[in-house]
Amino acid sequence: MIFRNRAAAYLGAGAAGVLAAGSFAAPALADDSADLAIKATGTTIAVGAPGKDASVSLLNKSDVDAKNVLVALDISKLKTDLVDIDESGCNPREDGWILCGIEGDTIRAGEDVDWFFPLTRKGAGVGSAGSITAVILHGGPDPDESDNAVTVDVKVEGAGPDLTVVADDVRKAVKVEGGTITEVGDLYAGNTGQLIYGAFNQGDQAARGLRIEVQLPKGATFAEKEPDCTYNAAMTSLTCEYTKAVLIPTAQDKDGDDLYSGARFYNLVKVADGVKPSSLTGGKVTIDSLSVQEAPSVLRTAATSALPENATGVAGNDVDPSDNTDDFAVVVAAKGGTGGGDGDGPGLPVTGVQVGLIGGVGAAVLAAGVAMFLVSRRRRVVLVTPGDEKTNA
Image (tube, rainbow, N blue to C red; front, side, top):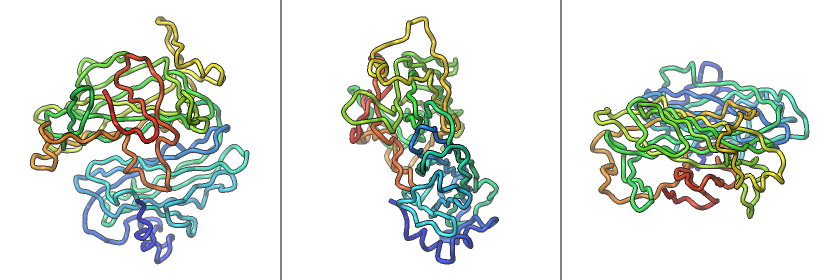
C-alpha cells in the first residue's frame, strides 16, 4: 500500500516548499519525537544490466514509533537520459521531486526498514549519471535532522556480480516442531527468534560460491551451530562458505530452469535471560561471492559440481559492494504485549523475507524467483519459488 493521497497533501504547497533545505520535518500530523535517519546504498549499475533496485535504509533511532512517514527523492541532478527512476506507486515527479509513502505508514521504535526504488537504464551510455538525494520525513518534529537526508552518486560502470542483501529485524519468538518453524508471539528475554536474510544478484555475471558473515547485537547468541559455518567462542558471530551456490543475474532468471538469482537463509537466535525490553541494534549480515562465473554452459552444471575439499574460493569482484551488507535489530518486547511469546500460543507460518515493509515505487525485493541449489546437507537454506512462503527446517 502506497499512501499517495497523503503524499499529495504534502505537495499541496509544492514539493520544493515542503522539502526546502533545513525544513525536513513534515507538517505536524502528530506530536511525537521520533528520531529518524536514512542511509543509502546500491546506486551503481553494471554495464551489462538493464537497471537495478537501489535501496535506502530507513532507521528509527528512538523508542517511539514514527508515523505518517514519507520518503522524498530529489532527482533534479539525475541524468535521466542515462538512468531514470520508475515512480509507479508514488506521486508523479514535481519540481524535480518524487514523494512516496511507505507500507503501513509507520516505522516502529528501533526498526530498520529496507526501502527500494528501481533505477532503469536509458540507452547504452556508461559513466556518471548524476546523483539522487533521499529525504525521510514523518508527522512530527525530529530531534536530529542532520541525518534525515543522504545524497548518492548514480553510475553505470563495471562488470560482474552485484549482490544485494536484505536482512529482517528479529521481532517474533519461534518454535520448531516436526521440521517446521512457526512464530508464536512477541520475542521476550529468554526466547528464541528467527533471523531471516536473503541475497539476490543484480549484476551482469553470475556469482559462484557465497561467503556469509553474520554479527549479532549484544544480548543475542546463535541457538545452534550449522554445517559449513564457523562461530566465535561467544556464539555471537558466524562465517559460512558455500562453494556450490550459484546466483545468476536477475535479468537472466527465467521460469522453468534450475538456475536462480536469489537465496533466502535463516538462523535461530536466542535472546539472553534478563535482557530489558529494547531494540538490540548492531546486527549485521554481509554476503560476498567467492568467484565470478561467466559461461552459461558451465552454469548449467555448476549446481552439481563442487570444488575440491581442500580448495577455497577466491573473492569475486562485486560491481557495487555498498549493498552487500545490511543491518538488523533484535527487538525484545515488554511482558504484557500481544502474542504471548512463550511457545504455547497458536503457531503462525513464517513468511520468509518480509517484503511488506518495503515500500517505494513498486519494486519487489526478490525480483525473480528467490531460490537456489545448495549442498544437500545444508539445512538452513530455504528453497523458495515465487508464491511459496512456507519455511521448512
